[in-house]
Amino acid sequence: MNQALHRAPTFTDVQAAAWRIAPYAHITPVLTSRTLDALTGAQLFLKAEQFQRAGAFKFRGACNAIASMDTEAFHGVLAYSSGNHAQAVALAARLHGTKATIVMPQDAPAAKVAATRGYGAQIVFYDRYNESREQIASHLAETHGYALIPPFDHPWIIAGQGTCALELFDEAGLLDVLIVGLGGGGLLAGSCLTANAVRPECKLYGVEPEAGNDGQRSLRSGRIVSIDPPRSIADGAIVTQVGHHTFPIIQRSVEDILTVTDEELVQAMRFLAERMKLVVEPTACLGLAAILSGKLDVRGKRVGLILSGGNVDLGVLARLLGA
Ligand SMILES: *Cc1c(COP(=O)(O)O)cnc(C)c1O
Image (tube, rainbow, N blue to C red; front, side, top):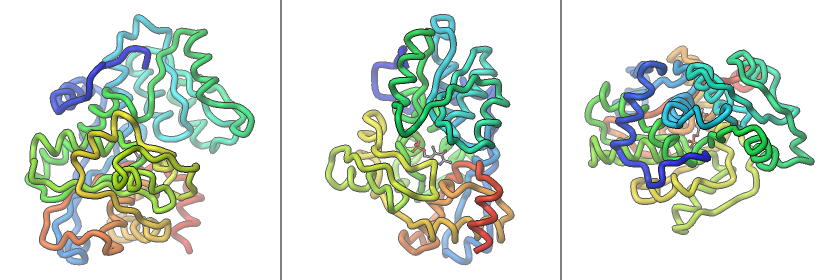
């Protein structure tokens, strides 16, 4: 963003974000399941962000960023994304009376284009094989005076995402473990700020798709590792590297970063649909998949999980769960 908070975010920023987004965001429910507890031998608390506005936690960060900036200084906001961040920025901009422009690939799913347009955003398409979205975005930002809202790597975004864990601790009380899906690390870094402040004993884990294990490799090697664009059904977490703002927070706070396969994600999705009647997107199942696959032993623990979003195409859902 052209305007920035020029220091690392802290828990105070998370608290400020909670206050800033309160008029706009939902406090989402925390769900429990006896079946799930019996199956895992733990007590699980699922924070249901598929019920957040625009269908994912991304609204928290986008809303905090737009509420924090001096919108008078810009002629609108800009984001490049075909996923949840696009819808989040479009809705947050509309609620703040500012214009949003979203740069999307020409072949973005029609449902996502329609949803983003439905929130009032202007969409600029690009050819993902021949054009660079970064260049298009920075050109648009400069010519029209738009402020770029990044999807994860900004202190305002991280602070906004940290409000989700804050609500989870408020409702579930003392947690021993908190497990969070990892893409670029905005949600995990924000959750770390919150957990470290409200419950330092709580052990933190990130979970990413096995095909996109850049976060795990970065943690093990102590520096940000960049990978080729990964292929996974967890489309909200297929980034090529974690952020420069998010990584240091994650590095000093988490016990480990685990990975799960697409098959394990589908099993977790099926459990949520069949047993808990919950529709979530594949990326939202990262944490639960790590537990159900036995990669993380949580027996006897009070465990928090963030179901990060519910924006899944129904055709895709039917195909994944029907198999
Ligand atoms: C973006 C996203 C993630 C990953 O969040 P980061 O802040 O990029 O790590 C996880 N789940 C869903 C549903 C998302 O949209």
